[in-house]
Image (cartoon, rainbow, N blue to C red; front, side, top):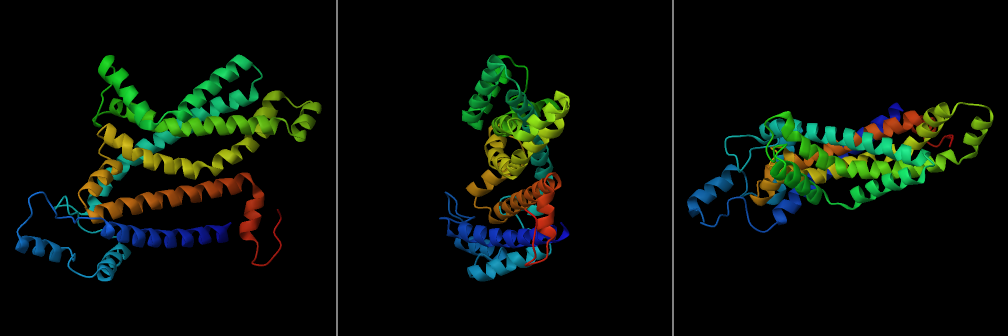
Length: 316
C-alpha cells in the first residue's frame, strides 16, 4: 500500500506539471492580451506593464519564470487585482468553494446513496417507481436550470431564502442544493443497480439459508459490496462539482474560486487562471487518491497488488 501511495503521489506531481504547461500554452494562444482594453492604453504605459510582468519575453522564458515561482509556492501577481497576489486571492476563495463542495458532495452522495439502496432492496413497485422517477429527473436536469428554479421559487416568489451572495448560513442553502443535484442522481442510480445485482448473488442466498437476519445481510454483506462501484466514481463526482461550481458560484454571486476563475478568463488574468486551475487539479488528484485508498480498504486484493514486488505474483 505504501508503494502504491508513493507511485500515486509521483504521478500526481507529474500531472500538475503537465497541467501547468498546457494551461500556460493555451492561455498564451488565446486572442487578445491582459492589458487590451476597448480604449487602448498609451504605448509607453502598455510596454511598462508588459515589462513588469515579463510579458515582453519569449514564451519559454515566461514559462521558466512561472515554474521557478511555482517551485517556491508563489503563484504570481494578479493582473486584475493589482495590489493582491494570486496566493492571497485563492486563500480567501478556496475555503468558500471547498465548504460548498464538501457539503454538496456529502448531502448528494448521502441522500442519493440511501434512497438508491432503499430502491434496490425494496420489492414494493410503487415506492421503487417513485424513487426511480426522482432519480431520473435529477439526472436529466442541468444544474443551472435547477438552481434558477430554486432561486425563482424560494427567493423571489416565497421569499424564504436569499438569492445571492454568502453573508450567512442561509445564503448557502440554495447553492449547496444546486451543487448536490449531480452527486445525488449518480449515487442513487448506481447504488440502486449495485444493490439489486449484489442481493441476487449466490452467497446472499447461502447466508439467508443459514438463518442470518435480513438486516445483517443487507448492511454487512449486500451494502458493503455494493459500495465499491460508488467509491470508484467519487473522483468523477468531485470533478463534476468543480465544473458545476463555475456555474453555481456565478449564478448565486458566491465569492468562491469558480467565480474568480470565470472573471479571470474574461480579463485574461493569466496567473489567476493558472492558479485556480492548479488548485482544482490538485484537489481532484487528492480526491482520486483518497478514493483509491478507500477502495483498497474495502477490497484487500488491491492492497496486495500495490505491495507486490515488480514482476512478482499478485493475488487477483
